[in-house]
Length: 475
Image (cartoon, rainbow, N blue to C red; front, side, top):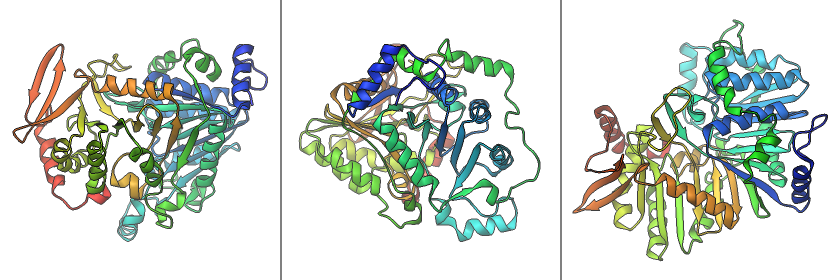
């Protein structure tokens, strides 16, 4: 296995030889990618570098600037003779069916939808199906994986869309892991399990919401395309991207883990992935740091974190503030647990809604929202993936991620956590005389809030409403 793909020299021979030597020694290469421009660039370069196969598995693939540009790269790979397989969750709008059908007609492309609705068009029958299959249709494949030639894999929290690549008005803070070596094979096996399961249906077998033709690339103007692709710079291949990063960690103890696809039918233990992760968290002796944009610990989760604090473990959690979150309902449920967690010694931080430390995005955005799903335990174990600490990820959605043991990589993960919880980036929550306070800084000025900071009245009402509704298990 080499990063010098057939017919093209992608990196210096000495770098390629070092990579091959590490893989032969049974080690996997892991590269954390937090920068949104880099995350877009590595997907483009991985598609351009593919010569045999491109396997893609995503919860969301938006029909916007970056979604169309990446769809172009996928199509061009197919035109070169690359075998492309795309597995998308059916949470994507049915108005995209014509584009999916157009792409799947290419002889080198197969496209499947996961847990699809049977009625593709609008109308009464669609409404009847939603009612009859209400609970089945809420079970989704939340996985994210981009696999090229079974040589490189990208796994993490990012879907495909402008907000994940700094091309929207409000952009997500997110984290991916680029994988090399044996971990790629593990990722490929997860893809195969979902691709071959009975809940993955070819788009052509489902019928279409419309019979009109679709232009896959319609609406991407040249100026926007040029701006986004300029972020790739002079890197001509994914191997050059990896070599330029100079920060790949070669690790022996790496596992790419996933819920089984049968989870969406309730046939396997509903909390399979959590059962894998929980012993790691409970093994902590010094510290646990959790990043989850949607954080609803529940009574059991709150007790576990509180017990760790009681045993002398420093437990810190970073999630979205009400002003930063894109799902106010989830924040309402999370708010039920804040006071008790703080009383028990768990440290809570909430991301501020404006990227005061972040560089300006493609379209001059100032908005920020957390989307990273990760945790670290002591100075030895880390996890990055699609898994949120909420009931939906535990019991309903299929999730995946990378679990690893390496002091240097965990130190890098923890360094990112410390940057994100700085007073300029996040509010620190505290209790004073049983009153909740939010502490943060803006241009060196300290602010102390006693109400959800910078959140509008509509968001506050919505969160308060969902705080008291008995629907936590669906959030």
